[in-house]
Amino acid sequence: MSFLEMREVVKRYGDLQILNGIRLDVEEHQVVCLIGPSGCGKSTLLRCLNGLEPISGGEIRLKGDRISGPGVDLNALRRDIGIVFQSFNLFPHMTVLQNVTLAPIQVLGMDRAEAESRAMTLLKRIGLEAKAGAYPDRLSGGQQQRVAIVRALVMDPMVLLLDEITSALDPELVSEVLNIVRDLAEQGMTMLLATHEMSFAREVASKVCFLQEGVVYEEGPPEQIFGDPQQERTRAFLKRIIEAGRL
Image (cartoon, rainbow, N blue to C red):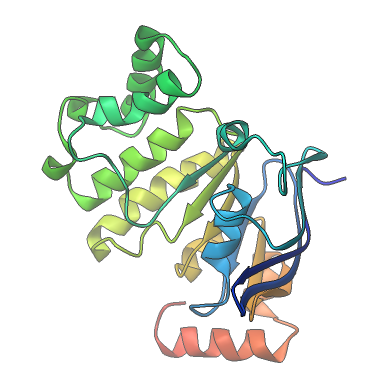
């Protein structure tokens, strides 16, 4: 039994089927990078894992417990599986500290002083403790994304999902966000990343999954996927990436 299991996961929007029977195993402490063309289902898969989108078929299990389908406690699920979006989604009328402490206070019932202490420890870890009283519009995009990561981490999730978290950033801000992810990987955080940053995926991933038309078309260690892909579609995708100078 794997730490996180997806079995024949299907997602439909009316007649449009986005996920076509995803099978994927993630072990604890693994970093799994999802790559593939736009529209292949990467973001939809992450949203299904977090319960933001109900699946249309199949099953998802975490540590053997079913976390998909009727009767699932979504609040409990989102405590266990955190997600960070490409668009930050910080509340503009709240300070950095208020953004980070809202969920532990409201969802976990954590004492405010404890939540703030925990938040400040994490903000210090990413070099933003001085920005605790600032509002999001006073931060750079990279700083906002780092705060969004801390907001997910303060819930102490078992799994962290990262959905194209650098795609909305200016190029010079990408590295400061990827450094945080690199540190989390070294500390053993179980993560799934949908990403277009191929060089970064090659560096940090335990496993790379190439998605095509809503299925995991090929998966393996990064040295195999990037160095010796077995499937023609994987090779064609990476050839385009290389030609674009992104690998």
